[in-house]
Structures are given as C-alpha cells and as structure tokens.
Image 1 (cartoon, rainbow, N blue to C red):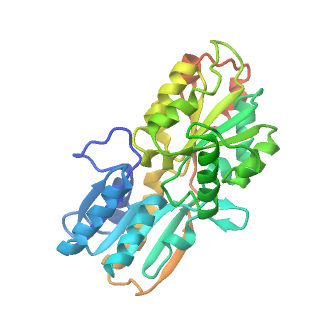
Image 2: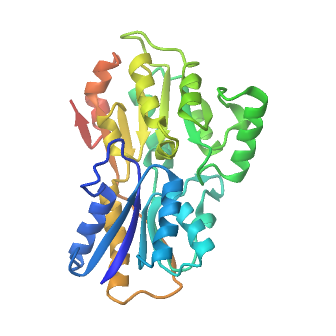
Image 3: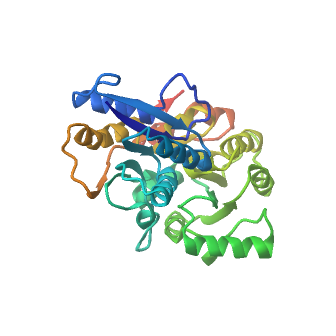
Length: 342
C-alpha cells in the first residue's frame, strides 16, 4: 500500500485527532477518484506552522523510507520540501497547491519550487490578483488612507531583491520601521494601492514581539471613527511564531481592521474579511494528480502547473460591529461577498 506524506499549516488551533482542511480535501478528492484511505493508500501527516519542523520531518521520513508521494498545502512549505528533496536525493513525486504572486514579470517562488515529478495547483490570491477585487477595500472602507502589510522575511515569498531591500531598511531604520515608496517588496501591490488612492506600507516580519511594536506605530481608532488604516495579512505570517495572533490582538485593541487573504477561517477569528481560494476545493483538485500516481498513470519526470479558479469571499459583520466600524451601505458591500457572518 502506498503512503502519502502530507505537509500542512495555517491553522490557529489544530487538533491532532482531525485532519486539516487540506488533508480532508485530499481524502475527499481521492474518494471521488475511487481511492479509499486505509484501503488503497495510507496517510502520514506533518502539521506545523514552523517550516523547520516540516523540513526535519521530511528528512526523517526519507531516512526511514516511510513515504512514496508528497502532498503540500502552501508554497512556503513546498519550498522547504523542495530543499529537502534536493539535499536528500529523494525521487518521491511532489504535488502541492499554493500561490506564486505576480510582481511585474516575476512569478515569485516558481523557480525555487519547480522540478521534475512535480505538479502545482496554483492559487490566485484573489484580493491582490486584480484591481477589480482590490477595489472592494475602498467599498468596505470609503475613507481608507493607508494599507499596511507585514511579510515574513523567512519564506520564499520574500524574494531575493525584496530580502536585500528589507535587510538594508532594517539596518538603517531599525526593527520596528515600516517601508514605503520604492523600497517595498511587492510593487504590484503598491500599484493596486495607487488605483484606490491609498498609501502602501510593508513591514519586514522577523518576530511577533517586533511586530507588536511595529503595529503600535499605527494610530488606533475610536469607536465609530472612520477607518483610515487597515492591515492586510497573508498566510506567510503563520511561519513567524505568534504573528497571526499578534495581528488579531492588535486589531481588537486598536480597532484597526485586519483583512486576511487565503484563509477563510480567519474571518471567524477576528479578521473583518477574507478573500480566498478554499483549501478543501484546491486540495480536491490536486488529489486528481495523486490519484494518477496511485493508479500507475504517473509520467516520470513530469512538471505541470495548473490554475485553480475557485474563490470564496467572507465578510464578518459581527467583527465590524465589535470594532465600531461605521458603514452606511452594508447591502451594497454584502453583494461582493459569498458569505456574511452576522
């Protein structure tokens, strides 16, 4: 019986007795292809928000000969698994789903994860994929002036040129300073902010404690005051221990809203909204390629990258009320979302 090694992250609270949404999507997708867990294959799981844990687990599995095929949920995880594959000389196929943000002509992380015996199901990052979606921020916050985004320094999304700018900025201005203008890492997002007439700021994220102090430089809101500042967060922040919780705690205290990208659960944990490609749906699409391997139809050496176009936008009206956000056009706003939590 073949063994699938799965690597997943991006949950604030994970029960080891239950598979993550990514693994559940894999199981459901394989069932649709006629393969039953425990009958036609077995799964061994690595779930952690620490990239080094996944790397260490991969090395242990390889040394013990425990897995036949690898399944990853998230580009940063696939990146460290690719590093382990290269070091160990593993021949196990790698199937992953994740984003490769487009910054100008640069598809971030694509070359670092690509390789033989690899299939990528590519996610859009729907909020920043197109200006039409990004303009929802202006609909949500009509007087928005500043968009703040922390990016983890320790993942493949912090591409080499971005890392050099981040390190230089940190050396000159210290560990709590935000970056603006041409020093930012993602100029494509800066351009989106220009479209909605907002200033764009990035923070080079190293630790949750430094993040807390950097966030404290953002002016808090009073109850009922208009929203001038928001924080947009991506799942790379999970790879800095405590960072997602720090962002949500700051939002509660300061009343500065957090908008999440690609993690629907965060709209139930304190983010006012999330714009995502649902993990279970994307994992089910990726499962079809695992099924090809299990059925003996896998072509050795193949490399494919396929887009996933499923999207789900969640708005949390309850969080908006808790943060005291004034909004006179809720009916119009809600039409832009698939799910509204009240």
